[in-house]
Length: 262
Image (cartoon, rainbow, N blue to C red; front, side):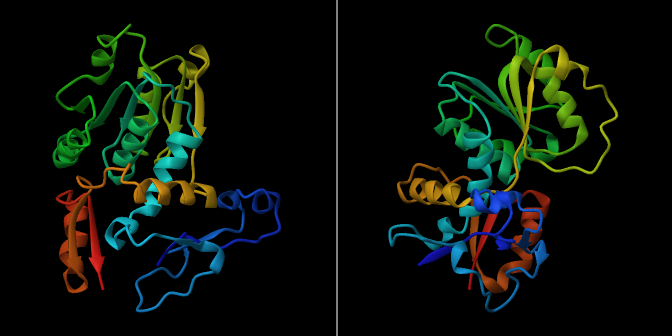
């Protein structure tokens, strides 16, 4: 019983591959992104991608190892959280929710997830995960809310899991001086705003991409130990013939994650 990483091909020779950071290899191609993915009856993967999973870890939970690793790398490895820190996650998609779960495991004291009215069901999922506040930014001014929280100086860490340029602007507004913004969400839009707050507040802006072998080993152990709460995130486990309904449900936000069983 194994799970597979997504790094379908890497050069194996560059400094990043040699240092175990093959997620940064310039020649990296991922399954479904650069090379054919898993929409097939069989998939052949390199042995280096495989991780053993214990019999106690069901496949439907192990299937979420990859997005858990994205959250683990972004929050646990690339960010700095101390017990009691205030952490805000912008964007309650699957990655955002898993970033929030990793922040909880890392000791966040006040944990906030924000989204829009379209994200109502996912904000409800965030509440099920035990976040301190799940905020609809169309109803509550997030910057004003943060000014009324604690010492009013802002969040120690803001995780941008939304990707839109507006999210980074919001992150710069609510992060505290000397704090950190970790950007894991993608977005092609130009910024269209000044980065002066980044300088004025001496904020650390950190990008996070993909994951490494060590991330996978840590996450498999956490999943096997039941320390990552996936119950609110796995909205449906369905047979393969229900794939269309599952994809549509995830697209509309009805489901956070749906797992297909062959």
